Image 1 (cartoon, rainbow, N blue to C red):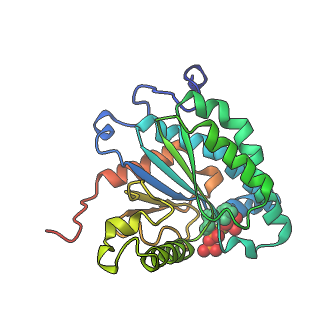
Image 2: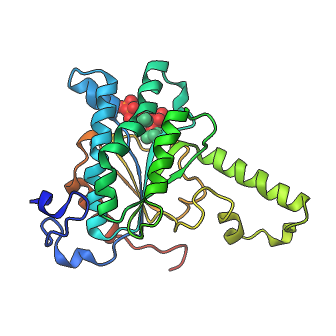
Length: 254
Ligand code: IPE
Ligand code: IPE
Ligand code: MG
């Protein structure tokens, strides 16, 4: 059925989402895709098999977000701390972009999806970066869902890099300390131009932020599930959206 509509663009008529839930869709959903290793272990497979299954699940959830009209989907793919893992695992993870993008790029393009990246290019192997940059280039004119990969990303590093650049601009006389507002500071971050996440999902039962979007999550709604990322389905995604839709976002007001 979905194949008829293309993997990402299926506008199937409210199959899982009741009609009233199609209002108040979060603009920006961010996901900490966690639990690949434990999922693999539970199946008696090596951790890397979990990462490959996790990679395949990106398509499913991107399609679900696109169907709902989510504007930005940010996926935490590799943190600045993940370099501390065994070399074989890191090497495998670094090969995933060149596996993922050639496989998915046609559907992404067909569905007007635009690829973006957040994180430090420095430190990433050339082959990983080439795959990401080619996808960014190929989709740069697309106007639909922004699929934003946080790769070699750390919230603290993002803040420090932004502050450093801000300090340089003050030193060079381009701005003064009085110019520093929340809005200006936003423009120094790697999420520049994107709305703050409305909803953060973390899979695998861990209930922490793990250095993800520390500035941007100030008023984000959080949703946690025990489900491991490779098994996180579109139904789970819709469940998170429904939970979001039932929340009262007060922002400190009454
Ligand atoms: C998330 O799954 C993917 C990355 C962090 C790269 P994990 O690899 O963290 O899986 P668990 O948490 O060990 O199960
Ligand atoms: C967070 O997961 C990073 C990504 C999902 C890419 P981790 O598995 O690295 O986080 P911790 O170590 O459990 O906090
Ligand atoms: Mg983990």
